Length: 119
Image (tube, rainbow, N blue to C red):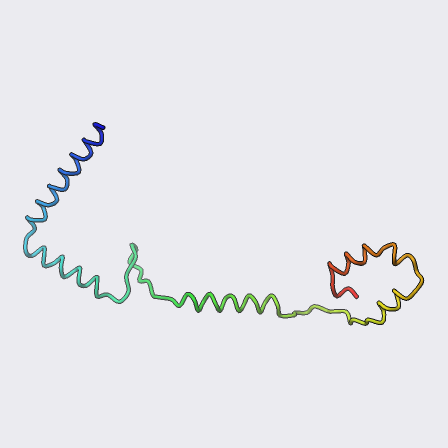
C-alpha cells in the first residue's frame, strides 16, 4: 500500500512540474511548436522513425494478384503426360475369368485412388 501511495505522490509531483513548465513556455517556442505540428499534419505521407516515407500500397490488389498467380501455377497443366483412358481395357479385365484380379482387388482400388490416371 505504501508503494502505491509513493507512486501516486510521485506522479502528482511530475504532473505539477510539467504543468508549470507548460505555463512557462515562451510565445516564440509555442509558435514554433504550432508551426511544426501543422507541417506534420499537412504532409501527404507520414514518415517512420528512420525518416522513410510510407507510400500507400494497394494491398488488396497485390494479394488478389498473388492468389491468381498461385492458382494458375497450381492448376495449369505443365509437361505432365497423361495416359489415354480406354474403358474397354477395364471391361476386358473384368470379363476375363482371371481370379488373380479379384484376389488383388484391394490393391487395384488403392492404386486407382492414388493415381487416378494410372489406366
